[in-house]
Length: 355
Image 1: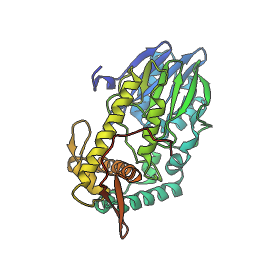
Image 2: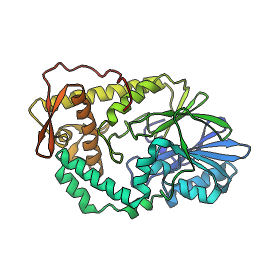
Image 3: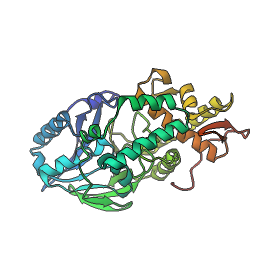
């Protein structure tokens, strides 16, 4: 299946009793999100939901009809993480069906920033402070000018908390299967993958064509890359015959794809060191010297949201370099700049722990 074929609308059986329902994401660069329906005698359970929109509700309703069911037949909702394209529709689907919602226990802070106004306001202030600290004042001012509001977030869903907070290692009995939770922080601090026999519901942790964004979550500590690399190493050898990602086609060879992601970040870390060779730079300045996406796009050619993602991800790379002494931090007033260390650059090694 090509990079684009996976977005074709429809219902696709990926294993006996497990179906991939393609839900469109209009106006989003990801184009679509995979929602997985698990069949048993009582109805259908879902892994992830998409956000609340007429297009996604129609896709799910049509998908359930294809499987001989209605949305009211939903028996459980399991979300890999709290981002709106994976969790946003959960509350509405629960209203329609009474199905309980399950979400990783370490997603509380992220979810609070989406459903509690004062936490949303705190997140917006925290994000601005992060960008200012790393030299991205113009970017922060552009974001402030568009006036992203709590009401806009609410329109994507996020009406309430889950019914059950899932712990790492917990086993959920849903959809006629046992789903074993594996904590994989990085893309978000509480991201979970779920292993069901030899099938891995991977969410956004391991994607077949793209690398998940890092450093965007609420109240980031700048160490998302360390957590992500540790999670990759920890999950590389899971006994998964088939990987069911949040975006992209299902695929085999989990270990091979993990190795590609590790190599990508080795390359990105080395590029950051090269960028720093000319003198002290902020994370925003380093991001501007790198290229982005599979198409190697210049930073200046990207839209505002993706320039923000590029900047926050660069922060995570520079923080890792500083923690490893491959770079040093220099405080210039309220702005942090990074300087390449004189030590020889070394390849990524497995972090000793997940932060």
